[in-house]
Image 1 (cartoon, each protein chain N blue to C red):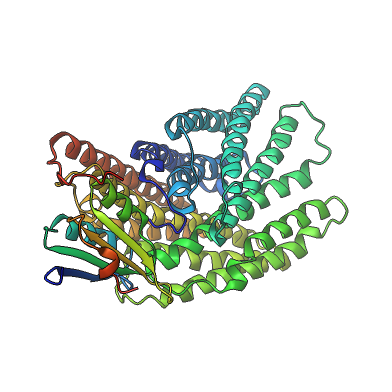
Image 2 (cartoon, rainbow over the protein chains, first blue to last red; image 1 turned 45 degrees about the vertical axis):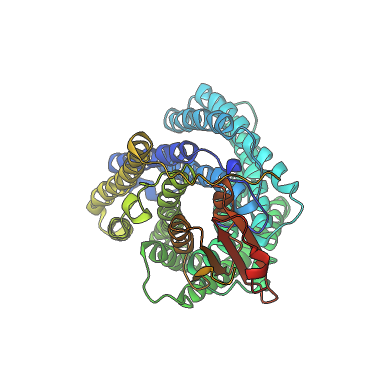
Length: 430
Length: 86
């Protein structure tokens, strides 16, 4: 992890902060597998509570957990943001997030107002609170990269989509009449999928694709303006929907164009790597970008020809895109943090990165991930395969969970038994 | 000074985190008579912080092409400025 901004190691959070978010994300992933087995192909019908439950298990339970964990790590290291008391902040985010997500899933399942109200209070305060703190720190930076600008916009989207969600849950709880329910719902998921998840991935990619994989930088027309244009389009679609029913139709077409352009450029950049051998993380990025291309193409097609099976497949493409990037970052972050924190503490016997998670282990997860995606797609046409898809989801997140436990055990073992590196160099007196 | 050995690493085309891994391995092997010289496409702040915390003498400079030159020595009396190509 490198920064141009200057940074002290003590600004980085303890390794446990990141690992705990990844752990809860993996456990929610296991829950997603169980829910798939329980709900079957009902998850493909967006109007069912089963689809709502699975969607929010993935977006809030899995992706938000991983993204918060990554942000706690990356904001200080990549952006130079000083997050004071990271352990306290992480605790104040993680516990309410976990309980809040479970309450929200219960609310969708039972329809009871008490669950909607308690989930809204916990999730609303937690998500808006931490997003606001991160946003405030990002805005205070003296110098911004394209990456930090994008993160700022993504966090603004997170706050907006949460406010929209509060309106929706207040309506479902019977506290509001919900006269704007339909428009707000579209704004909520549009900001969620494109303004938060996609935009955060785009912003991080501006930094990590070039840095991790030694590629040329993104062209300025993408890195300079894409995040702001996407955000502007989402605002336009949301506001326009109150006056013009077809507002999202036109906005979606432009968004799809931008996303296709970005995904194809990322694939091109990954093909311009100097190193001929690609590890699992490169393939996760490639898979993610190919799925984004497929998802954008499916979105475009369904706008003109609403084919239900293609809409169902599009959910799989989009979820596959986001999860592929989460997995790519996971296999970069976990070995690096374990190795680096131990080295920073002076452990001579710190395991090398490939000993924390072996490249072949990550590659096996890629195959599991690809098989999972294929099983989900086939299950749209041949429903019994959904049980294979659910089982593979369990295997996929179980695999991740084991990698976290393994890395943590190695970390603790090295701290207990490791030989410390003593330089015995007298420090300069100046 | 002229007898000081240079341990050189061109990390410009190495993928993350190989430069950091190799650099840390190299500086652990440093003696009084040698120094580590790395060129990199980015300023490797974690390496620099880690080396400073361990008590090494460190110099990092960016040249006109945007390449970073990082010099690390165990012997704090070494004039790294004089050894730097920038």
